[in-house]
Amino acid sequence: MASLQEQLLKAGVVNKKKANQIKAEKLQTKQKIKNGKLDNKAEEERKAELQRQREEKAAKDRELNLARQREIERTAVLGQIRQMILQNTVAREDGDLAYNFTDDKKIKKLYLSEKMHKDLSEGRLGLLKSDEQYVLVPKGIAEKIQQKEPTFVLVLNTKSDAVEDEDDPYADFQIPDDLMW
Image (cartoon, rainbow, N blue to C red):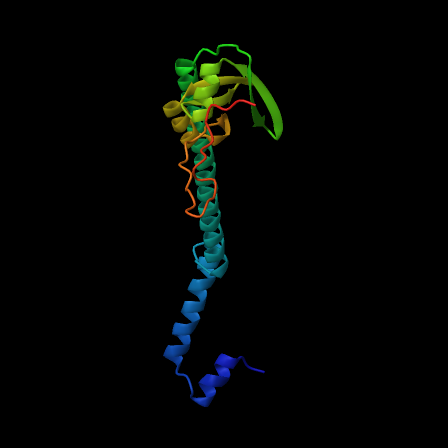
């Protein structure tokens, strides 16, 4: 039995010139495959896989760099906060008045002088926790620290003007602010 090429030549479907041209093309492709110069599908897939791996590595590197950058920024902010606390700490005067506040769901008590107690209650001072110690700082500094890192600020009272009801039967009887029980 003759090859398909010979059968096509006998039938007159393909002429001798066309058959030789196809044979030459086959030989060239075999030589390219043998020499490794042919970009076939396997080669394209390998290149695509390498490109995908490069892109994944670049994305992972970007993520790691962002995480490192965030950590550096956080460390810088914490350093700024500690510096602000050190420079602006109000010397605490021990006194007889207890000021109660919460720290990590626990009620704590701090004894202050009458003036400091009043300033802290009225919001002129803020109470912060720094390195397991409680410190008092002016309101402006406490607000700046609260914007940067709210976990430092334990107490920062704000004055609120109470809205009075028109129908309040006790509107004529104001409660004094300095009332001590």
